[in-house]
Length: 430
Image (cartoon, rainbow, N blue to C red; front, side):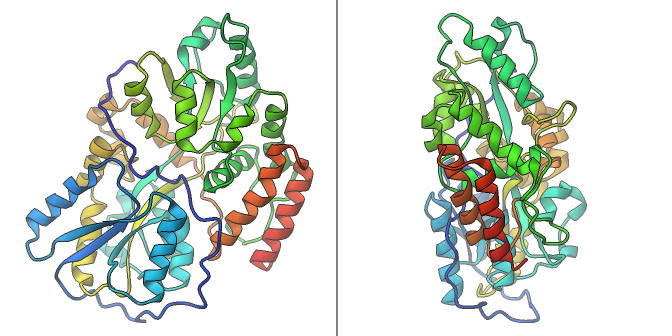
């Protein structure tokens, strides 16, 4: 992709992490049974640290048009687990300090089940404008609790210059083809030690995301979203883990990648250490501007069989309203503003956030500036959410505890999957 993309900073590293522990709450917070969206006046908007530095500009637009109903942004930690705990603590103390909240989409079930966020009237929102998989992340028991304001889908970054030297003019469609291409690149002078692949394999939420993608890409899943049954004990799930374990054992994935989070992988890719990288869209403009000598493109994640594209985990954040917010009428209007097409376009162009409206992806002007948008839309539309359960903190910890030792070579994929199935069954009561 030759098009020049403007410098865009990381905006919260969407979907990159959650907590690996449970909330520790003793029970649901008290919330009104019949929600009355009343009260107008100043409100707060709470999210993780705005690394882009651009979100205040959007809030300034709201504040200019709503005197007396200004919104103040409260920035929390850069670490998602700390963000989550701060929001939970605010709810458990019934504080009105936090009014509107940017919650990771896999927190929605937990926050809704504990009544830490309010049900939102669906008729107030433009449901038909949202990408369907993204919209569904805001639902709990078929009720809307959080409206998506930023999505995310994984992309496969690959070195077009090195692949061309090795005789390839396309991205790999499968893991086998990726293996073949890497061997060809490693045969080039000076590329003998390049790592074939990197993802996010450190023991944090990124590991859960990557494992979830591997299992879905291989044709498996962890928890059946329809029945709630634990179904991770399958040949497909084992295959998904085994391929990465084998690549690490064979040196195709560097051992240091077991410590990689998003930025570690980006730095390795743009410094020439990695041929193929699984990461989020925010990486695109950063690599293009920080390392213009690196020639690359993006594609959907590779599948395990011919004709089957790999499956992304569906990342993103949704905006919700605290039951203890005083000015709920203002809060509801702000949610509509913050999730509008105009706001989506601003967040794409200024903060590199993946849109939630289909029309923003299809706008020719946006595609010209951000050539990866069609691939990203394809990734999001085919993505799967991580397990949507009220005790997500315990579930993601179980996933990490069972799979990290597999990648370290301490236990087999069979053992890891068996342990994971037993723990998930215990946590879900299935």
